[in-house]
Image (cartoon, one colour):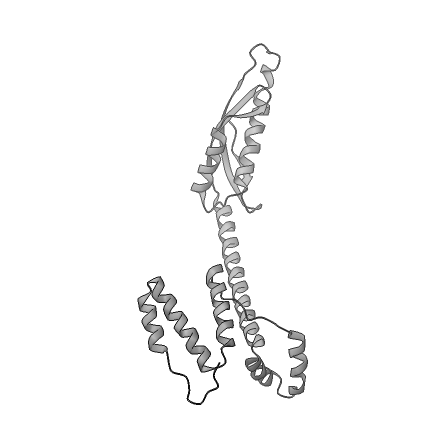
Length: 229
C-alpha cells in the first residue's frame, strides 16, 4: 500500500490526491538475492505510471481520470528485468484544488471568448478591405481628411482575398469559389442563359427536382438589344 500522494493534473499547480494499491512478483525464482528490495522499484514504477497518466487529465473530470489511471496501472508492467508490477488507484480532489481548477476554467473560457471575438472582428475587417467598394466607404468614414491616401492602401493590400466561410468544408468551399468566379465571368445575358440551362440539365440528371424547379423559376430571358456572347 502506498500512502496518499499529491500528483499534478493537466494544470501543474492543481493536484489529485492519489492512493495506490500495488502488487508485484519476481519472475526469476532462482535469483533470490534481490528479494529484499523489490518493493522500492515497484512503488517507484507505479508512481511514475500514475503521474504520467494524471498529468493529462483535469480534476474537474474525476471519473475520466479514475478510469484512465486504473486502466493503465492494472496492466502488468515491468519495473525492472524480472519484476512484474500492477496496481489500482483511488483518486480524490481537495476543495482548494477544485476551486483553482474551476477558476482556471473560467479564465480559459473568457480568453477563448475574447480570442473568438477578435478573430470575428478581423474577419469583418478583411471582408471590408478585400472589397474595393466597401474599402472606399470604410476609409472615408475612418479617415475623411485622408482620402488621397486610399490608393496607397489599395496598393499595400494587393490581392487580399475575402475571408472564407468558417463552416465551409473543403468541397463546399471549392464549389462556392468556383461558382463565384464563374458567375463573375458571365458578362452577357446570353452567357448567363447558357449557364442556367446547363445548371438545370445537371440538376435534372442528379434527380434534384426541387432545385431544378427553383433554377427554372429564377431564369429570366436576356435583355433586348444585348450583345450576343
